[in-house]
Amino acid sequence: MTMTVEAIRPTDTIFDAAKRMRDLNIGSLPVCFDRRMEGMITDRDIAIRAVAEGRNPSTTLVMDVMTPDIIYCFDDDNTEHVEQMMMDYQVRRLPVVTRETKELAGIISLGDLATKTGQVQEIGRTLREISEPAHA
Image (cartoon, rainbow, N blue to C red):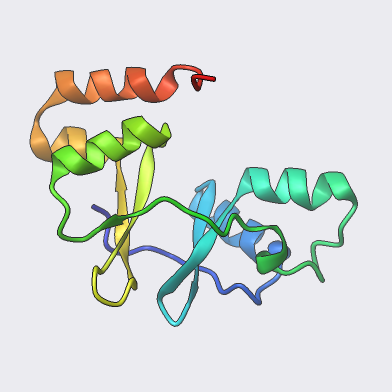
């Protein structure tokens, strides 16, 4: 997993979030209050829930447009469990939190799984599952 993860506070503005995403060349940021996960904000959240609604980026807070109910894994989960979660929820990356305090410990991506486990064929299957349209 990537352990050095940038996060943003729920009380920061979406202007700050967008600038940080641009500077880091990323599309999402964990939203944390004192390292405790509160949600995630994505470039899509900003576009759909703020810009398309005519909200002012300098006054709209991250907490007003973030996704609060996030899927995450624990820092002691095994890779098979993490891979299954990615398939089940059709996501390519998961925040990693500590089991006891649910503080942000890092982010794990499909790329992390592929390079660290060497199970390229299995990760390919996972990517295929993630990319399938959601079943009704």
